Length: 287
Image (cartoon, rainbow, N blue to C red):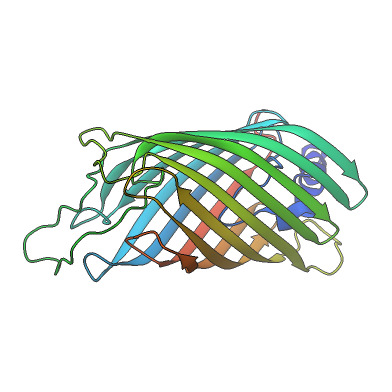
């Protein structure tokens, strides 16, 4: 019973139920998961590929670890059929986030964090499809990312403000793209990019908390942008991503999101995508 109460208290404090609207679907907040907790996540992304006229998919299994109240780590893998005729493993990445500022008030707080990600990817930069499986178009994609497309590093700053049921967050980061395991970045691709985002989350249900077993319903709207800063691949885009999220028993969440471009001049392989994610968290695992 004592352990049960400890878990309930940990969940219902600043990193749990009361800030559930900070659990953004397409970005990370400045807040961390509770210390000594373990998260297991599976993300599936579905999209139409411009170069092949086929539906693509990317699977992203992920393990998250709350080292302490300020530091959390993610280990993520990638597999897709985006650059191959069938789904194959593409590589993985390590993500770390350190919360360095916390200003807490009743039903409100402001937090800032720094993050860094490193990725090692084994993927070609131009699609390699089996003969006859895809009616190929000329490949004109100049968008790279660290989530299956290219090796590299990125880092930046996150600031998140919670105001009762509304949470606002912004991110500014820099990405440096590097050669993949077997392929070098083509000369007409940019090696440097600036990433930025603005996210809003609103807690719809429950109207009033009575138990941590109540189901949460959160609505999100996120603006996601990037600018390539060098080479022939220069360009920018801005995407919009509405999302709905359910949290069950304060431990398991289901995310649904649709992402589409609203502005930009960057050649891309896909301009819209659909995301489904399931995540389960285990608290106080150290004890």
